[in-house]
Image (cartoon, rainbow, N blue to C red; front, side, top):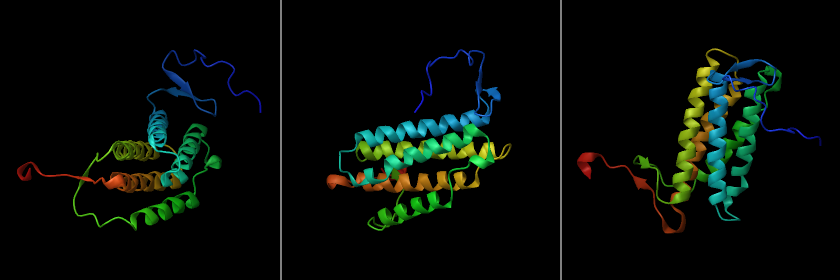
Length: 186
């Protein structure tokens, strides 16, 4: 494998633009770059969650793969090429299958849940909220440029999966979810 980067800094972005894979330069606040940044932030947040889990944790059977999917999605956004769409129906189906498996063991949800319960659950909820922001950015980008429609479905389903994972994590080791209580009920 050849070196991908032999120098980390290029100075090409010093004037507020950045390059896309097709060679085009856009402002660093362009909706495509904002979406890329939110996907990257979500991936970093998931990395923190993965690092916080103990070896052998059942969630580690799929969470690291989600990070690779997010990197693929970032690649799609950087390529600006409809021929380079990687996220497909299969990726969405895999999320749905994982969602169904995890959710089957949880009690019905009767209250709103606050982020918390324990550190891994709170980290997972943080990733979920970052996922929702990334979804909003992708939808915004799709209003002005071509975006893989499967990517929109994937990121929507991913936020659902992260919510369910947070519920699973909150119940670990005898823990429990933190339910929202309206001000007049506290």
